[in-house]
Image (tube, rainbow over all chains, first blue to last red; front, side, top):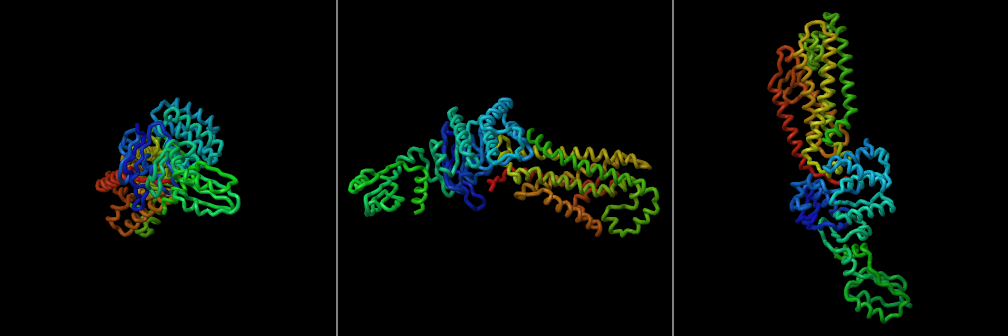
Length: 299
Length: 266
């Protein structure tokens, strides 16, 4: 079953484009990454799905229900955590979380139990005033208010800012645990490392358009390899530069490094002609592919 | 109902302060009534010496001033201005604070329709104003009864007091409309104070130049209290104007609110 499905979803703010013709399908039980630089349209897509902004054209369904017609019903099963969290400063943490829980039809005592569980896990003092919390602690409040009703779909919009590495780890563990229970996650980020760590599939968005949707593994495997070579003495690199499929080539002293996409044998044949000190062939990390993808796309 | 109760709680303290101030204002002022009436002739002379323009600007009717109603109406004008500020502040703030406090994302990603949010906030505001009115009217009535020496007509006095709520409802509706139309109102008081005073000044100028037309646009002049005192009734046309305005403002406010795009905080 498709949890999220958008069809040619388009949003203009006045005349300026937010997103255009976004087609996305997020299946049940997957962790779906959504990456792109700031201002590419990640938040606009998410905010449209959540009914905060209204689509200019196109349509979208969540749990098979139209987002514009069944907003409140859909949101009963969604947990949302934005990149920056703001809550009512005059409230205590526990009051805010109870208030947050009071919007859901679920049994309130079950929700309260979940709040306490999560607060303990994340090491958050429930008695403090919102106003007195540090940024990281506010973020924890955000995590709890997003999970306290045990949603079937969790939507995260650049959620890790402000969390220290330890908390980030706990947060990711929490998400994986939820995911194991069958919860679907839409995870937007501009930090590729975290997407790589967590997600199954990923959509890349740029200038309001989806440019690619792929499995994380495929994105890394089927496309490129990173070659790092060190030679004895000076070498003419032209053979590498001329080779089709080579990109991002850098040289330093007797070292050469490049990304290669295509038939590996072509590279090994050339390499065989040289005296090597060292040779490394690695999977490039997502970041490299991503940058590469963005650069080649520019041409 | 959770949003409704949350708003009642959030505005509890400020409403208490408003109630306290309004009640103190009428009490202190009404307690001066005996001093004014002790020597009617001297006071009347002072009043007569005031330029007619000033008298009409302040809604002082020589015919009525020395009755408890007339005296009350004089101070009531100022209380109404304060009440208008309270109501408009509430109207502007109760919706716009979610945006200025950036809590709107939190609220509107919960399973609640915008209609329900709007309705909850509107009804919470109305309840808060009703509570204010109950206290204000009771205090006015009790103190007025205490200081009044002549006849006391409950009906007339009540009719005067009820216009306080009418004016407040007008400004509540105006405030709500304003908060939906204008994006990111940082401070409700900065929006409501100038608006209320503009209407007040328009009404006052209208009284000075004696223009009847001005009455159609200043809610402070919708209810001519000297007319109420002398005739025991309101002028229906202004009730209709107020009613139409309030309904149009609230419906427009609701439509705009449900269509509004909530942009990401930046």
